[in-house]
Length: 305
Ligand code: NAP
Image (cartoon, rainbow, N blue to C red):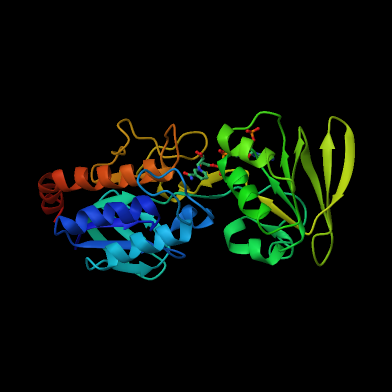
């Protein structure tokens, strides 16, 4: 029996583990892919207080090592189900805990265009910091108007010969500072009020068809980096938590779910700002809350035996 099982090893999950391990709790972190979560996609993080600039990969690795040095138990298993008596079923095992923290984050949203999946790795990417180097001196597009797209465009402008920022509106959701920095770059061009209608190319991406009002236009691209936001994947927990219409976990105070002993942290929950700073904040609050309520959870657990 663990004190706390944390589902997800992104910044919020690892921060929850950090606080729990420092409080001497028996902790298991379950992750389906690799530690780091969405921050791995960030080529640079420059709005984390106290750190001027760090790559998402370096940040995630530093955090993971910090937690590992405290004796983290970490398993690469996919969680399939969590029950109200805090049993966690994975594709390999079933574990039990006094408290479970859901820190499952979100995944990249797709455009759901024909041949989008087929062209992944052949011109279509969702991660500039991972794949950008394949596009040195090439022509790329970045789709989206949020911070991810703007940061991706900034990073790619140091590699590619030309970067198109393609956005469906003329206003940006991302920081104005990033927009102004991009406007200063000679090799960055803005294509605004346009949507991507088609991805052209069979074995690799050759061009995209853009639409503005009723006008269609093809532009040649070697790569398209899609950064149109994230989607949660919380459906498997809907027996123990309430979800909003977008699939985010509802928590009245940002920590507790509707089930005693099951907490939420990070991008997986309904919140106003999804940033690294708010993810680590969530992780620390979820962990300390679970620890504070542990005696009560123990009584609950003893009662069910
Ligand atoms: P986002 O802020 O949700 O922006 C998504 C962008 O994609 C929006 O501009 C949206 O357009 C556009 N979009 C959505 N669906 C689309 C579609 N089907 N076709 C074309 N465009 C579409 O997502 P994000 O940039 O990934 O950022 C997610 C969160 O992480 C944000 O809170 C962001 O601030 C944060 N973030 C933080 C950091 C950091 O801390 N350093 C870095 C990156 C991201 P509309 O604007 O028209 O809706």
